[in-house]
View 1 (tube, rainbow, N blue to C red):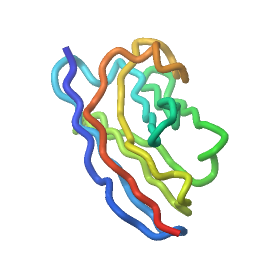
View 2 (view 1 turned 180 degrees about the vertical axis):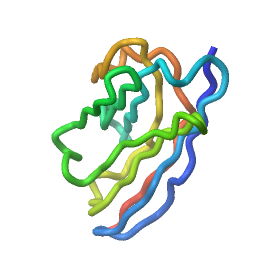
View 3 (view 1 turned 90 degrees about the horizontal axis):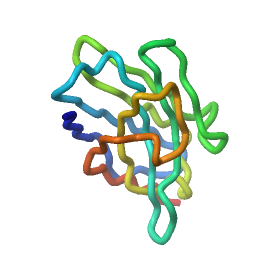
Length: 123
């Protein structure tokens, strides 16, 4: 069992930055892929970014590539998402999740989820 808790969301103006955190508790954090998804009102939950402890690699959705940076502190069981140049279309609830696969982008590949943190970007 893995428990995930996100934090760091809030209200920011377009062009601003936010840093999300996700603390994991329970099973070993190091062996998992950790990912970020987001869900805007009336839309499907979509992949944002993922980080693999095993391969040390990352993966991003095209919509955030060059603006968002995913990182992890394995010693503190914490995943981060640095979000820069935020735009109103980035407004969503952001979720972190774990997967035993390597850098999947599909929601079904992730088995544990946090409760989410709201990010609102005003124009």
